Amino acid sequence: MRNVDRALSGGAHNGGVRDLIPPLIPDRYINLHQADGDGFTYVTMHAQTDPGAQIEYWADTTDIGFELLGYWDGGVAYEDEFQGLPVGTPATWEDRSLAALVGANEVAEIAITNSANLASPEANNRGRWGGARANGSALERRILIDNPARWFFLPFGDGENAVSLFVNADASSTV
Image (cartoon, rainbow, N blue to C red; front, side, top):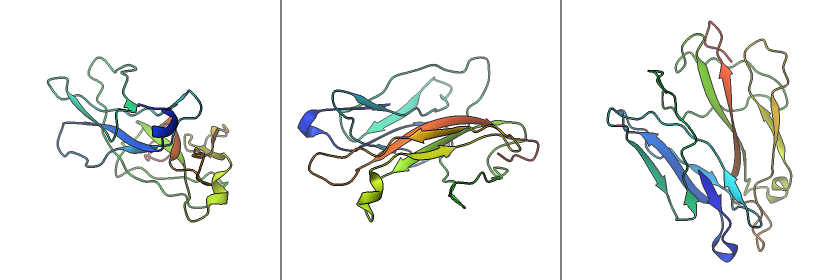
């Protein structure tokens, strides 16, 4: 999914995809900040197709575009979730049990966002580090996520930058 720079029509926009398999997850979309220059802002989302190979997608503007990047073949199911995982202690690796959502030794997709902070606009002018890794791993799987875009007449960002990492849960469903 991408947000296109449209000179003066830009700004943050919402877009998302979801499967049609009940129970449906309402409002499964992400706020994409305005793209800079003549560029795009991208984020990847996955959805399981129904028996007729259908999904739903939604956008609040035609400035949002959708592109099929690939698919899983051969009976591997993708479980559609959209649950927040709050940060406990900043700048530390923390174990997080996903047992309510993810089975033992399954792969979880984790979206990590750098969101605009309207209460503290000056905090939006920098990138932030985020990461996810397998429980017990020593790998520094961190990514510097760019600051939310600044619209030329606003002193603060107006959306989110997001990355997506895949993490293998351990035998106790912990990452």
